[in-house]
Length: 94
Image 1: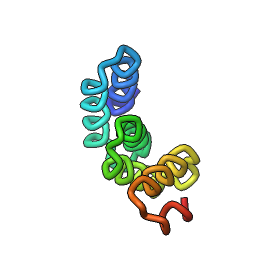
Image 2: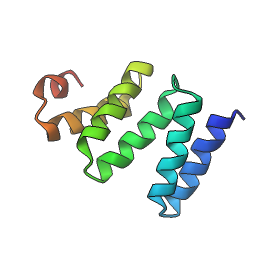
Image 3: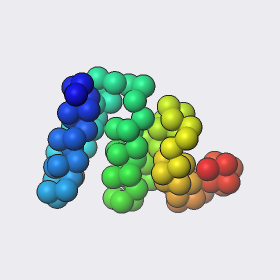
Image 4: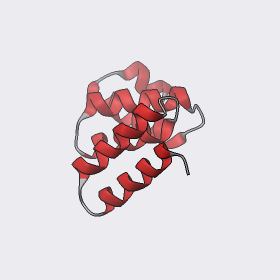
């Protein structure tokens, strides 16, 4: 398993244990190692959505949809973040 995948798995374990900050750190490390992999962007975008950090959620889910246009979850979360930010054009597109 490549290092970025190990970091994402470690992030999931931390997130499941309630350590959101630790999980986000692992996901961001995975982004740095594999910047073209959509999964860590999706994970951070989802965490930001749950925390009401709409601008960050938008940015990470937008990145995830560009890296993996078939990721329905990222499109859904992008639409929610866009709606929260009043970006109706992106919300409709998502």
